[in-house]
Length: 133
Image (cartoon, rainbow, N blue to C red; front, top):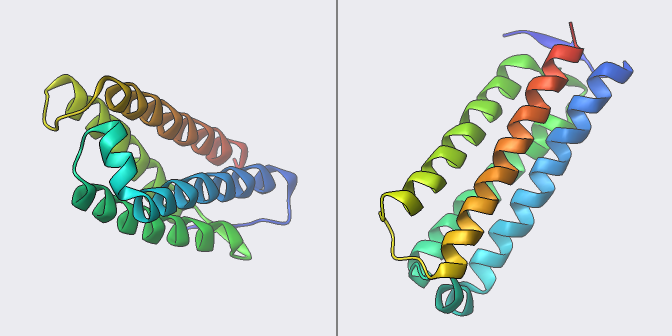
């Protein structure tokens, strides 16, 4: 496992992107957990599924936040985050396109927009890793 010290400006960008990812993911997870019923009415998927997604997202946010807060940025850890972010983005779009879940129109739009945001974080994290070299 390779690590890079975060005292350089190059690593600072990656650390910031990871921290932003953690923050956005955590807020999203908390919303799904705390407001699963009303969000289910708006978005379509059941409240139980949204609660489960909320718990997952909160755990993921904590892990990404810890990665961002470390004294050194783990390249292997960042690559794992990138891979998981890309998988999440693809899964979200596939869920909408393939009709894997029952989405309202708003839910389908929200899911695709969320996938784009997550893919954007992955792209910024890739750029951050490249800056380290």
